[in-house]
Amino acid sequence: MANLTRDFFIGLSNSRFLNKSAQKWGFRFGAEKFVAGTDIDSVTRTIREMNARGISCTVDNLGEFVSEKAEAESAKQRILQMLDRIHEENLDCHISVKLTQLGLDIDRAFCLQNMEDILTRAAAYGIFINIDMEDYTHFHATIEVLKTLLETYQNVGTVIQAYLRNAEAVMDELKDVRLRIVKGAYKESETAAFQSKAEIDRNYVKLVKKRLLGEAYTSIATHDHHIIRELEAFIEENQIPHSRFEFQMLYGFRQEMQYELAKKYHFTTYMPFGNDWFGYYMRRLAERPQNVNLIVKDALYTKDNKLKKEPLLTAALTASLFMLWRRKRKR
Ligand SMILES: Cc1cc2nc3c(=O)[nH]c(=O)nc-3n(C[C@H](O)[C@H](O)[C@H](O)COP(=O)(O)OP(=O)(O)OC[C@H]3O[C@@H](n4cnc5c(N)ncnc54)[C@H](O)[C@@H]3O)c2cc1C
Image 1: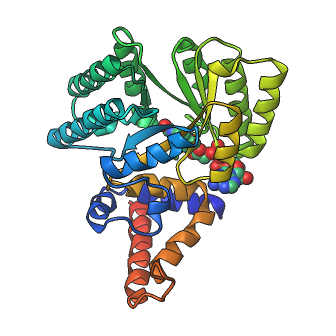
Image 2: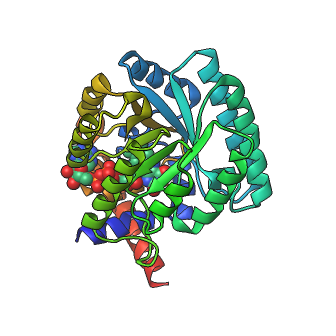
């Protein structure tokens, strides 16, 4: 059942039609709990609040799987504006980007040029840029683009997904590069990725421990308290300098735990913003189906807890999402 729910939301996250439609809807289904704002001004306010609590941020200008050059160009412009804002306001913040938003599916050279423009400005401001890791069909291209960029820039790193069978080998190749270690958020084949939670968790802990014993900076990105406690014990036992790692969590998740960890370690909150929220939000629901109650509540009730006048309309929309997903699976 858990796998079915996960597949359902990952299926929805990949629908180009729904992603495009959602940009016109505005935040729906409780998405505002996990998305820090629609524009640079609103996300800046949230960054300031987090910084005041001793928490760093990494912002993600939402958007992926872009197929028009003009769209990739405007995404780049927004990222450059965000860099200017971080610099002008001296925010404790770096940026996470997705290569498919910057044209990876259109033309590799174009995407590389966009990344160079971003990295040149970020380097002038002393800001780090993280390349998020997307689904496995983009994995090799992402690593190749990263390696090219590393020939010129030092302020760039990426993400290793512990569910991938080749994760350790690639992590070792990038042993001097700043890396974020995650479990992995997409649905991948058995050939490419471990499928069971136990195998993924085991590999996750193994990879992070190996990184912590090395020299390069590591972002430990998980909400899993069992794993966090085990890693805290490892850090203590091995006297790992706190300057060599940080914990990271997503905006809107486990807020109290974020504050608690930030008192002891360097801590960064991953903060998505923008109106292209659908794919990101559906992947979050896939990871934690308990959040589905947010959808139901948001669909049926207004902000002041009154029953909406059009629950039938919302029920019809939810049913059509389900039909669409089923049709897609049959194809
Ligand atoms: C900062 C950050 C950046 C990321 N970047 C990427 C990326 O670039 N590419 C990518 O593929 N994936 C990325 N991810 C997503 C990641 O791959 C996982 O899909 C996601 O983090 C879920 O795995 P988990 O380790 O957090 O915990 P899970 O395996 O989902 O949960 C483990 C256990 O932790 C507890 N738990 C988890 N969440 C909660 C909660 N909200 N409240 C209470 N208990 C909870 C529960 O007991 C649960 O059983 C990122 C995640 C983070 C935090």
